[in-house]
Length: 138
Image (cartoon, rainbow, N blue to C red; front, side, top):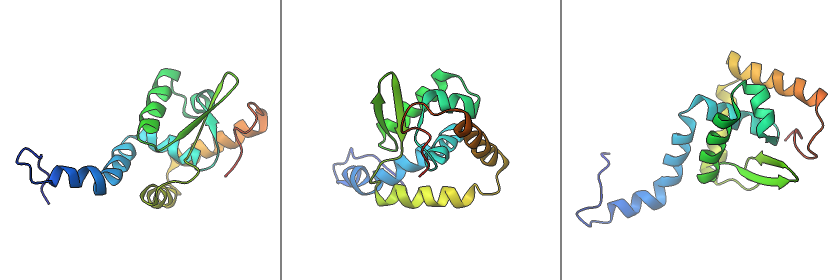
């Protein structure tokens, strides 16, 4: 199927914005390695930006940019706790997101980068208890 705009007024553009847009947004989010790693970690635990910095070894500005991208597309939720911004997966994700997150979990089992991220998360859990509610396993 070839995508086209709605200049002809045939309603095709409206169809894309309703039925398929959620799936398109999911795959746009999944096409970046950093966002994939963030989503994988969030499938295990709620985290703040500083936790992502430690685990992914990336600067705060890069992590925050990716989290804002994911948040704008309703792929993550955020809650303020004092000075901390705690990110998590949606409590009630849309079916398309939930299905693709399960697929991500299956696909990354043998990938060394994702395995390393989980080891770093486990290490972080042993030495860090702040803020309350972050680093809580799913």
